[in-house]
Amino acid sequence: MEFIDYYKTLGVAEDASGDQIKRAYRKLARKFHPDVSQESDAEARFKEVGEAYDVLKDPEKRGAYDELRLQPQAGGFAAPPGWNYEFHSAGDSAAFSDFFRTFFDAEPGPGTVRDDPHAAPPRDVHQRIAITLEEAFHGYRPEIETRLFDGPGTRRLKVSIPAGVIDGQHIRLRGQGSGDGSARKSARGDLYLEIQIAPHPMFSTDGRDIYVTLPVAPWEAALGASVRVPTLGGPVTLKIPAGSQTGQHLRLKGRGLPGSPPGDQYAVLNVVLPPADTETDKKLYREMAERMNFDPRAHLEGAL
Image 1: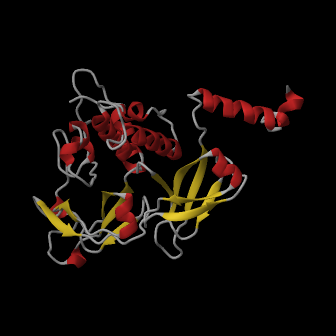
Image 2 (image 1 turned 90 degrees about the vertical axis):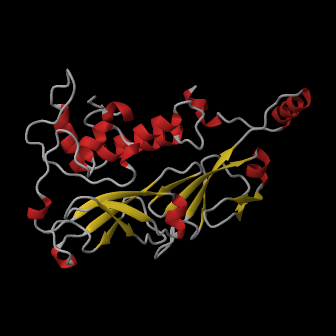
Image 3 (image 1 turned 90 degrees about the horizontal axis):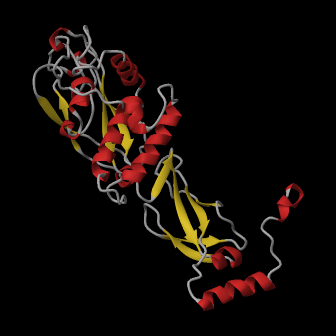
């Protein structure tokens, strides 16, 4: 088996903080998202980035992975003696590498040591579930597959994901965890589903707040305008104040993810210059330069 360097996959140092890992993941996930990327290997890279983040974002998994990194890697990689970690991941494990399925998935892999589940006391189980931003906004009722921790095989559970869940939130399913083999829920632990919201090609999130980059023409920013803005609940009209600038945040109150209180949506303005491809266009720009008393570097005068 080939060892996978997840730090190299995300392009971060071994001592990177959780925030640095999250920022690197978001950047690469947007770059290789199959819906927007022009890269020929976008889908494969997107899966590799997601797999690396699945391990490095979780302190327990990352600690176990750092332990694996200390093992000799020449001549094929195998689990160190006494390896007895047990992790559970959502989704189709076939989408992940052999390395991930062996060490970081619920199904036992070669070289992996498992305790007898029948002898274990009631124990909580953690599993991730990936959903879209639209599903987080509207609510979602998926059927998930989870391992039967009291015996061989898997089971399917109908789960209710409430509208307004945020990335990293946990949903508790009482009595659906690991136990002593009894059918009684009271004899088993709980199953905790950690919500993982997939990157969106248009929107980004911060808790329940949603952000969208809104391109505007120079005259819309200078003179003010009313423009249509996409939101998860449907397009709305937004008034742009006269004199707006690139980077300015305009709030759409209550247009974020549902909750008590609901989040807001922020339109981040990006003033886009029209191209000067024709002589007529160039003439307009020259006239603006001659007629408008404007120096964008006036505030730097003392430093130049």
